[in-house]
Amino acid sequence: QVQLVESGGGLVQTGGALRLSCTASGRALTSLIMGWFRQAPGKERDFVAASTWGDPGTYYADSVKGRFTISRDNTKNTVYLQMNSLNPEDTAIYYCGATLRFPGSRLYATGSYNYWGQGTQVTVSS
Image (cartoon, rainbow, N blue to C red):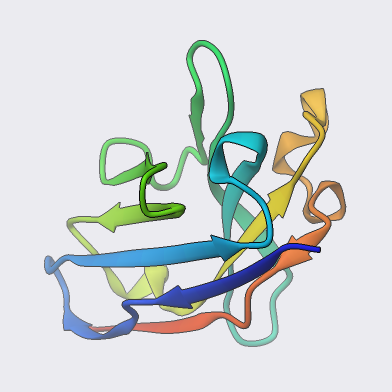
């Protein structure tokens, strides 16, 4: 069993930055593929970024490329999402997900992730 705990959300103005953290327990981070997703009110949960093994190892939604960076600290069993140049369209609850098996082309699908955190709210004011 894998437990995930997110933190780092909050209220920020347009153009600001936040760093989200997701700490895993129950398995070593090196055995996990990690993803960040977000869900705005009334919308589905959408893929944001993922960190996998191998090359390139990181994947991003087009809407966040060049602004968000996913990274890992295996010594802390934690994955991060650095979010820069935030805008109101980034407002959502952000969830971290994990899976033990590389899902191939379904890396971007919520159904590919077996474990989820409770989510952290990010609000960007205009």
